[in-house]
Image (cartoon, rainbow, N blue to C red; front, side, top):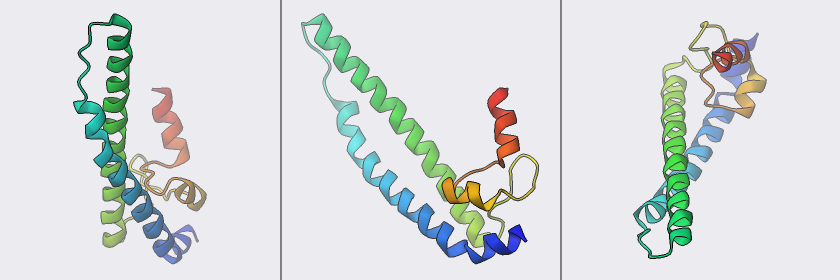
Length: 117
């Protein structure tokens, strides 16, 4: 039954994935400005603030890059007809989870196990 649900919602999932992908790509294009900003200053406090801002930008860019990879993987799986299967156990990921997180790689059970380890 879940397979039929995933197949009938294929277009919905694809639209969600493409929308999030476009949002991420637009935000990633803005990030290099923060990373390239000159943090040199004689004021130690200002240097610390600029350094933290640059560190946060780098971590955010890394997170967005990983999300983009997951989204692209999901789009390839949609095209191949293998979308919605858990990378951990091979079972289908619930449609509620995919609706909330269409690039999810794991079912809720496997994700919880991975989070504990």
